[in-house]
Image 1 (cartoon, one colour):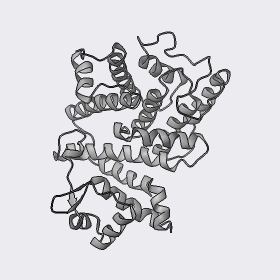
Image 2: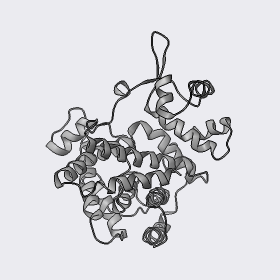
Image 3: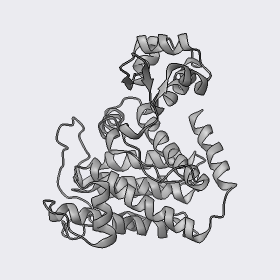
Length: 327
């Protein structure tokens, strides 16, 4: 059902195309910086959003930040430019060499010996129980993987992109840079099919990593797919808000977000005050802030949570089951 809602958002965005050259270039530049910042932050890079922009766009160096962190910003930006170029090709076919080229850009100047090359050693991720394939199997697995992402099987582009990301990090074909390369590949597939790139926020890092590991260990992929859907939906919102001139293109901090009283939240979602109060008591909804007067305030995430609760109720789940699913 959530995939269907994204199809509607895509149709809405398609109706506004073609974009002017200036607007299209501006959005590409914004997403290039934002995806560089968030993708690197997920991997531990400590450059802020503003510092990332300064390094990439102005060539400045940031005091107290390592050379590697600077290179990671410059490299990912260059890789995003390559993704934009590839997304505009007439053919949607993605070759192994395309993937190797993206990886080569990610590790350029950081580890030139491993850049653009499959690993020939076993690897483990600290803190994870996932066991990755034997290095000698990697070339064969990548050849099969490449055939799969180029198959003509009818699959929703978001599922295809998400699956490609998950499969690549599960094969873990490189010594380093697997996550960044997988996210670039995922966004390439999305953009090839007319979707905006998936914007996975820094604050969602732990949930994102856990959902991947859960899927890799044989668990449900539902949590993982939900995170990717949220990320794509977020990017649609950014496009619409920008086109309508409602907000600046930026991720709001907690202190900047609009907060709603229970009555306001009820009107926005079509629910009743008692229902929202009951769901809050059960722990399904989180109170973002309580005023000195005792008013409970909710943020925008509560709106999405309420929609999600209603979707899960259609699957005839109990509220306790929904609570576990929302975790």
